[in-house]
Amino acid sequence: MFTGLVEGLGAVQAVLTESSGLRIVVAPSADMLGSTERDRCCLGDSIAINGCCLTVVQMENDCWAFQAGTETLSKTNLGNLKSGDPVNLERSLPVSGRIGGHFVQGHVDAVGHVADIQRDTDWVTMWFDVPEHITALMVGKGSVAVDGISLTVVAVESGRFCVALIPHTLSKTTLGTRRIGDPVNLETDILGKYVQKFLRSDPAST
Image (tube, rainbow, N blue to C red; front, top):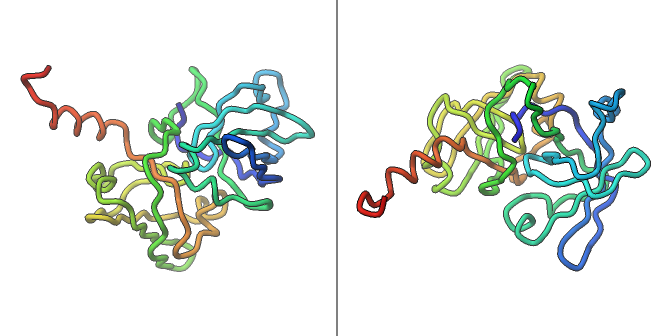
């Protein structure tokens, strides 16, 4: 479980082809390496990379390696990564941690694309084109994770929605470098998924 509050930007060091997918090697920001045993990342830990929950399978030279299989690559933008690309990183939520964003599972629902970038001084309103079944799970002022970033939906229409990005978000996450047409990972609020399922369920079968 994550909160959608990006802890730091990592840099992709290598993307290696494996028989069943890709091995992605990432150098995390220095402040994510941890100064104490409690804060330090360990082999087997869950890390959200651009909102996709992956397992640390190797640690070497202050880099973390992850494996992404065909299912993950088909549902996320991780297959587009190349050496040098920045990625949003968040470690899983500790039991004693604060939930500053919203409950994010790290299970990407679909890939959307940046449709429009409207600048107002140092603020940005960003629109995304997404599959219609994704916007069916969104409401205005509700929550959505875009590349693992917990954001508030400003407006939602069939097949598109927008968010307002403050300067801090633009400077500390990948959204500050996104361009029109770029793919982004999307995860809708889990509460909406359960509500939709209950409403569609056949009462006779429950």
